[in-house]
Length: 227
Length: 354
Image 1 (cartoon, one colour):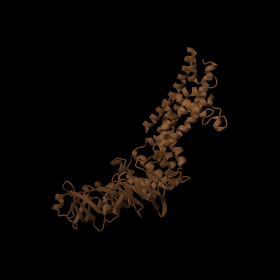
Image 2 (spheres, chains in turn orange, purple):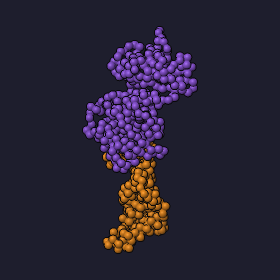
Image 3 (cartoon, one colour):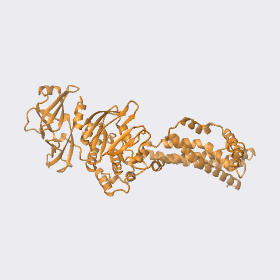
Image 4 (cartoon, chains in turn yellow, blue):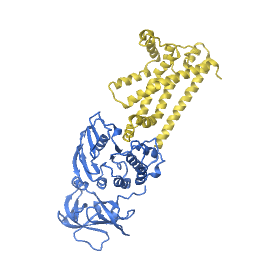
């Protein structure tokens, strides 16, 4: 069974991943929608910037965020004239996880929106629905499974975040120590049993998540076949 | 209206009093783009359109009347039903603009299109013909000022098209909505439309009554379908007697028709025989006196003879071999008799069970 320390690490991990999903989810879905449905000047630049965290080393992202929130950074206390109190708190872990999860969410959401025939939304409007109502009652339900998969992938990515989190949130037990950081600490402390326990918890959570995503896409495929 | 397309610019200026106006042309002539522009789906189109004197679309590119405010009922070729909703929910989506749904209109629409039994079905469980009928009902229930039908029969095979056509005829006669009917099938246009506009590479090539326009557009087409309409005056064992709208009478198969009903039927040009003298004691039930209007040599040693039914009636096209035409010395002005079997007449206005 899980001891108190393991439960605490698991709860911090789930809280950070859930909050990161709440941040990266809507933002990624909005970006995915813009990339799928709108053309605007500099679209390819936006696409590249959004994809950047996919290829950058998480440590580089972490260092970038550290510079941003450091006292003299753009969002630092000296510039803003008040302290956001982000660095080395669980909120920093949320920010790091959100940044690395965002490209995955945006790309999956984009594919979800692209899979919906835009003419269906036009048809809804031709039948008298407002632009917003047509979007909410036609596009969103048809893209729903893809959007849920996008959020789930974002959650999964946030769950395993290590490099950027370690740099801006630190590895503080009971405050910012997530499962991946805890595994790292256990290995450093030569505590094989604990590393194994945290690894097992990570595997179970990841398995449940992937099983759910797989379940969603199977349902999607069945619905597709029926069509 | 004007719209730049990939290979040409759509440039159309049409005025018509017809209730059902056909837009006829080959694939890629700009027919669908025309309807999409009227519906507001093409943002780069410059359109000025009026229905019964009221503006439907009056706009410049990127500053247009919102799509939802246009009041058009659009049925695209692929029906475009909402796949995540049942038939009932699709039809309810059509009632958004019309406000509180008009029960009588709903009932009448379901009856005319015979879709009452489909309401609880998923749209993914419908056949091609059923999809088109549901899309048509949805468009009608949206309370449009004009119907835009984009080859509603185009995605169906030939046999199914013939089965759906009667529903369109019913919609035309029951609802009386101004309609733009896009098609590349002359038979459909002749059966449904009061007037036709022929579109070629984005420009209007011809406009006028279908029979007149098609006789000049058909050129060297080998086989053509004659489409005739009339009212049933008598029902007998041999068939239904029709008083043709343009004069003359015809006996057609009686299945499903009633006395007083308006019936549209098609008759292939290769199904008609020509005799110089009025034949007697023959099995063909239809013998119609006519005057030859023109004789055109078509491909493969064949000729097409256009002959007007006696008394200023409709012009029927007949396909025969050039040698037969020469033997009979057929030329414009010659008096002939046209012979065709009752069973050669395909009644288009009676729906068959799907």
